[in-house]
Figure: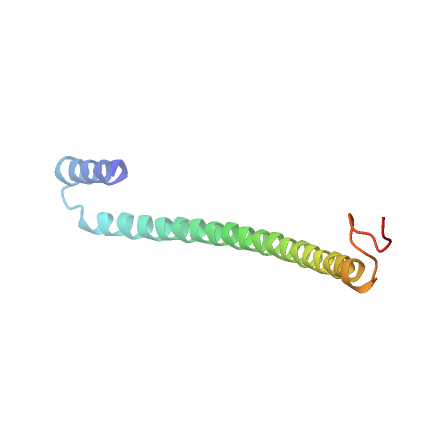
Length: 103
């Protein structure tokens, strides 16, 4: 808001004190200022968009890496679980603490 207040004061002083007929020059100055300000706003928006795109690309790569790691962990756990079931149930060996031989 300081920018707006400064312009109001400067234009008011210029129109009331400095120039007798300020309108043609005022129109030119305000038009040029609007052109430059809109250019600066567009430059800022482009920079922000580029930053957001870069962040989105980085986040996507990080998510893909996590997905691959989780998929690999899930496959490893599945394989280990199958091996445990095969050893416990498929081998036919008695479980620990029991014996087939009488005492």
